[in-house]
Amino acid sequence: MRASWLIPLGLLAAGMVASVAVGAAPMGDDLLKPLSVRMGTQAAAALAKGDANAAIDAWEAALAADPRNVQAYVGIAQGYEKLGLPGKAVKYYREALQLNPQDIGALEGQGKALIARGAMARAQVNLARIKALCKADCSAATRLQAAVTSATASAEAAKPVAPAIAKN
Image (cartoon, rainbow, N blue to C red):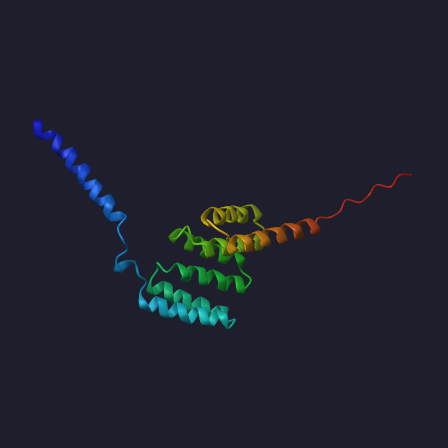
């Protein structure tokens, strides 16, 4: 009977050791695979040249090599934005943010793509998240705020004006 308290104590100790291991420094497996990095470099070059389709293909190859490559998801999203497909861009930004919810570039890009789709409230949520993550002056927040302001002003200007009622 006296030994029965040892089992919960042993489980507690094992849990503490496991929690220390979870917060441990990154090991070699946390690094991206070299092929994924090379394909990402090619993709970035293609996007810089304006070839969005080639960039998307290369980023997809980077993801095939290593599905943990957050930048590949962001790159694909940027490619779809260049092609005028903000809906697809939002999807890939979402994938990037699932892997790294604190990726400020992905939050900014997704916010801009949401604005292009007319989802102003969701873009403002991204803006708030960026502001919460940035501890100092944050250019991503400034750029997204400018995009939100510009889109809001454009929407206000596009509203039809009610005709004045003439008095006889």
